[in-house]
Image (cartoon, rainbow, N blue to C red; front, side, top):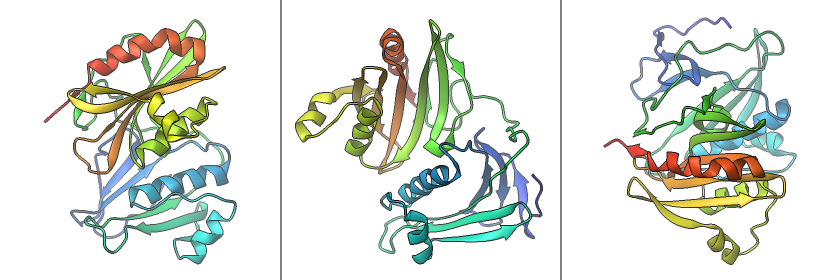
Amino acid sequence: PTWQLPEGWTETEPESRVNFKAFDTGEADVKCTVTVLPVNGGAVNSLHGNYNRWLVQVGQPEVAGVNWLSDARTAGLYQPLEGAAGEISVFDLQTEESADEPNRIVTAVVYQESGPAPVSEMPLATTTSGDPMTFDVPTTWTEGMANTGFGQKWVWTVDVEGAEVKIAISHLGGDLSQNIVRWADQAGIEIATEEDLTAAVERILVDEQPAASVNFAGEEKSVGGVILASTTSQGYFWFFKIDGPTAAVEKIRPEFDAFIETVDFVE
């Protein structure tokens, strides 16, 4: 892609490989980045998923239903524009006025319909990428491109006798219980009561930090991992997730648990 920068903007080094480009806007507290994301489940569903992610980032609840986009437009949170690359979906979201740390996110989404996806020139991370932790990655894990549409910071895949198991670390906000219930649902397991939720969670420590360990083994798919509160951002969580075919995850889970034991938060 090509573009014309506003006067006073300059290109800078991206802080993460997930950012294709980054720009200095001249305002110390304002960041501008260009990120390339895959379209998951079609353009509308992908846009909806990202919209909910941005809502969470500004402390707002996620929205469901088929009318989410028209409701966002009525509320003044969304507007379509036309640009050189076609239709642009613009969202303007911010925290409540009473928030202790006001934050605003403006995003412009453009779909690339053909041609190869742009690739960041930054090298893959091996242990850390500017975030406050280090860890030891097994040599059998293959690092891939993290999907920031799901807030991923790192992602690996493991071949287990022809079956693929995915391990990912992400950093998102949201309610802890809701995220655990979502993982259970992905494995085809229902969490219907508080008792079900309590029974599913094992309390552990990760680098002396309290954490929740879960393992939902469905008939075909297993989803689980470890969730702990961020040591640096109040209201956010670190998600260490493992998912794949149940038999394959069962074989690799001890290796995943050993990996978790190497996590060290840098002070």
